[in-house]
Length: 113
Length: 118
Image 1: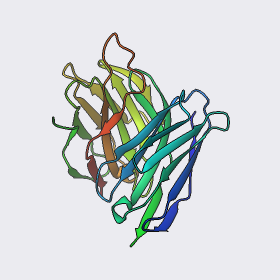
Image 2: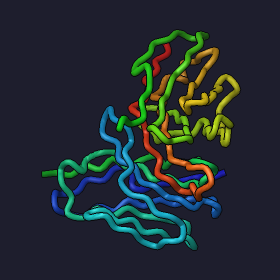
Image 3: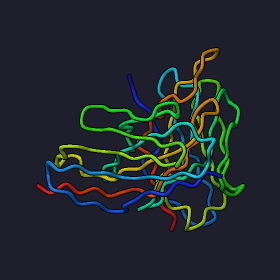
Image 4: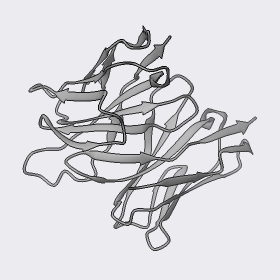
């Protein structure tokens, strides 16, 4: 089955700096890669996703890149703000009339003012 | 529009008991998935249902079961509760329209049910 690794487990950056979180996956059949942000005690919230037919996607300060050959994908956050502090999860999976995801273990991002 | 709603929000049970958790998807969403999130870890996939049929099952024992109703709401049942079942149980729904390529539709999570086993 699918296995997703995520690094680093914790990340501290100064406000205004960039943050990069990297994930690798094992199943070449996976074709959908979402990223979720989870604040303490709250639900995971989808922040960006990428399909396997696309190499890069950007939404304002957030971007995701995908390398299918190497089976890895990364989240890039630019101009970080204190409200970006949260746990970020990557996931990989494929659609079967819905989603069947394997999540990474998470990265705790702290943005220091 | 209302998001994914789950009930109850918190639940305390003792070992050996049974529990039923409920989920109402976003209106129009036909696919529902269940995840278990242990403190400090990522969500672990338990089940996925689409049009009342099980479409996926994670690596969980048979004590875990689920079903989806005609209105697309869903229940997760756990029998013979163990201390290790203590976790946040998350439900997520996605839009999978009939007859249309429904692949890779975004999945939206509810707030979860926090289950504590004493």
